Image 1 (cartoon, one colour):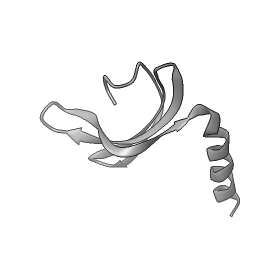
Image 2 (tube, one colour; image 1 turned 90 degrees about the vertical axis):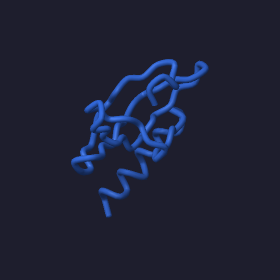
Image 3 (cartoon, helix red, strand yellow; image 1 turned 60 degrees about the vertical axis):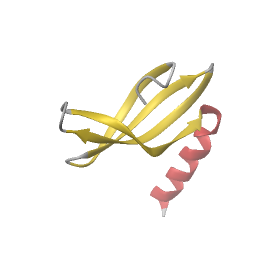
Length: 76
């Protein structure tokens, strides 16, 4: 969320449709690191994507649990 995080590093994007993308970022706030997975919406007025409230910031120490869950989905 532009301006909210102390530091942001984009890791990837997934296009949902012509008006929405999911942005995956490594972010930090107050010396804590997170993986932020958030829906961004297209603002036609200034031709850019902006963050929505739809998303989650996962503490980096829990990301391995998220990976395990995603891997188990692939195996199903």
